[in-house]
Amino acid sequence: MNKKALAILMRARMRPNHHTNFALTPISNEVNQLLPNSQGNRSGSDGHGNENLNNQRSFEAVRESMHSETLMHKTEVLDSALNDFSEGYFILSFENRRKLLITLAKEYDLNRTQVRELIKLYLGLQPPGNEAQSGVVEDECSLSTFYRIERNLRHSLKPVYETLFERINTHPEGLKFLTVLRADILSILVEGNMASLRAMDSNLKDKLSTWLSPAALELHQITWDDPASLLEKIVAYEAVHPISNLIDLKRRLGVGRRCFAYFHSAIPCEPLIFIEVALLKSITETIQEVLWDNPPIAESEAACALFYSISSTQPGLAGINLGKFLIKRVITLVKRDMPHISVFATLSPIPGFMPWLLSKLASQSRLAEAEDISCSSADKSGLPFYENVLEPEEERALINSLGDLAAGKSGMEILLNVLTPTTHEWINSDKLLSALKSPLMRLCARYLLLEKKRGKALDSVANFHLHNGAMVQRINWMADRSEKALSQSAGIMVNYVYRPENINEYAQSYFIKGHIHSSDDVKRYTQPLTENESKNNLG
Image (cartoon, rainbow, N blue to C red):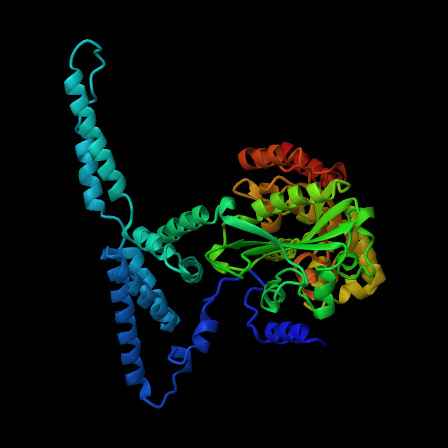
């Protein structure tokens, strides 16, 4: 193994892999562990009293530097305060960060008393007259008053913490620091919603969206020739299909594969988001074909660019859709460099399918038990809110697949009992696999196309691609047999297709109407269920 390969391997193993999912955690905990004066490294030799005193002193010092940042105007003094604030923030325990951020959200908000007074003044003004022949001077004076109050109102509606964010952004490494701040804000909001903190998060998110506009981002193709420090971040940040070893990494960066990342000049050598692409003859059905296709086809024979993984590296950028711009840029780049490629598709996970299905099965089971109804689906069908998600032939197949073990149980009870265990033993039974394929594929199509939240797709990955202008092309049985995929989607994956000529049209119809474009094959899965629901509604 050469020195570069060894460096990548060792650093990737040593790096805390807290980005393998989108769960929000205090992302700068790793910094706390490395700083000699951090709370996490303090021994108990001084006693809890001294530790609490030191904690309080650190908090007050950081709070004072934060306050200074909002008031100072001299550049040299401001830079010093910014340094003190950013350095001091990383030393704080997460509990003190929480306290500081709540203080910032509440005490450095806008002045609502001033806003109310300005609104009263504005509403008390008389609109200027429309006479063209007279009163021109008076109208100009009246308009001048309108403009002055409107300007003051705009200034008053700007929270004090917005000025703080703007100043931090001008500071070296300030943008990175702001992503850490927002990651901590999101962590606090997960624990409990606070209106003031939610408003501050919305403000910071809008600012970051502006500062990270596509025009400010640089697209870079990641190759094996890039520095080891960059490649180890790709290994550490890969969130969809973990990179198992150096051979795997070289394969993903080699012939027939591409990896593109967005960078920002204020966060050098740190990819904000990256996408992995496989060049194939056609849209593949399983992830094994992508990850273990050895050797790959000649690139000149490829007709399809398959996006099989997209990973965001910064939890503090959650909700900022950099992926939309990245996919469009990559499509444009691939079309330019490889005009023989005409199909752009994904092979995507369906992370919410199994949680949705198991929750639905469990709720129906509780409903039936509460009503003390026999196992017959016909008896239960008269219950309010009861829904048998299985077709009659699917239920019979499930019962037959278990033989005597299914005695006295309904199809949905069997389905719940089979799918709930985390051991996923059902994939080792040919009979169960055969019996489960029809209902799970049909219910997965229903989940993707019909189950919605606020008019949009319930599944987060589906919502992402549909917002970007993709269509649902195909769902694939046993496309990923990893433990993660079995838990998320019973091993089912979905192909979304991006048709360059339809991207904007599909994105707009989904955004405005919630309309999901899909192939006839996928729609066909939902038709029987749709007909049954229509009959129930008519009845």
